Image 1 (cartoon, helix red, strand yellow):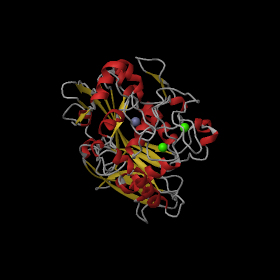
Image 2: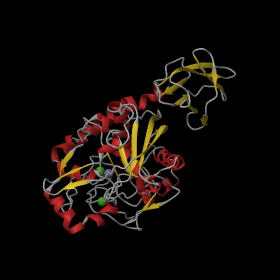
Image 3: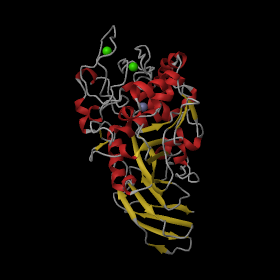
Image 4: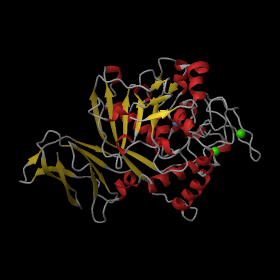
Length: 431
Ligand SMILES: [Ca+2]
Ligand SMILES: [Ca+2]
Ligand SMILES: [Zn+2]
């Protein structure tokens, strides 16, 4: 587990002016505190350079490639009582919302104000559920402050089975999301940015690959519908955008106000992106359309409360900007390469992508686009004995099948797809 030094001023403010309980509904994510404690001007100074590189490498001759990137997701639900148990249905609802937000298919996209219409876009990123792990535990997860050493710890032990949580799947190949209670509700979630990005302080990257990924407070996971509110403050209505925000961090995005120090908010600190207007401070759970904390000389715009990387109410968040999109796609091409190639790695001639393989039970078979519309599926072992197993069929941007081999004894199996025009077989190793 990582210890992080909090800036003295921040800590004093946490304990005095703001206070923990009042802070809770404001702290949409845990990035804010530790990033501002390690921030220095040089990291942000190089931000523009990073962005320029991102644009150059991602978009080539100014046109973005319009390939849809697909990221396989593993959700770990780590719970100790019925309230904290998140059902498969709610997980699917959350992923539907995430997918809408990352394809600009969210119903509220049209609510973006006219002055931002030109700069918002479709990130072209989709998320496929590969596996859900439910783990019952007695372990406590909380954001741990130590006033004597001015350090605090993220509850990264949720990412270890031995420590009462749930081991990740290979964090280079899967986006792991842990959903658990975070005692005290000080934060709704946190995510580690990719390593080697100059726009983040070096200390902010994951301390090790094993803990890379996203943690979401179970209260903030899901919807809409349903709509969630916190126990501490009914005013805060959550609509599943905590995950959208944290995936933004995971793909390299900073907060638009640049994580400036509490109490000394400054307009010159920002996220390094020119199409997100400068802002002094987060829009704490507000939808104030008149908020304009920084007066830009040219084309002064209001603070963009529509942005998923703000702390505004989920109800008024609806957009990523084009530069944010370029950064995320750049990250997927350069720094989290192993993630997005899942569906792009389908070899020519092969008809599907099957993962994970080896598997502990569930495999997902994602079909290439030019496949038959329907397949008969047969599961056999090496002796050609057939087995009847649960198979779920998904229609989406890519057609896929979830094949559940968990009732079978470990060994090698063949999943045979028999269509009118095509036949193919996937060899699966069941652990
Ligand atoms: Ca900006
Ligand atoms: Ca402004
Ligand atoms: Zn954040």
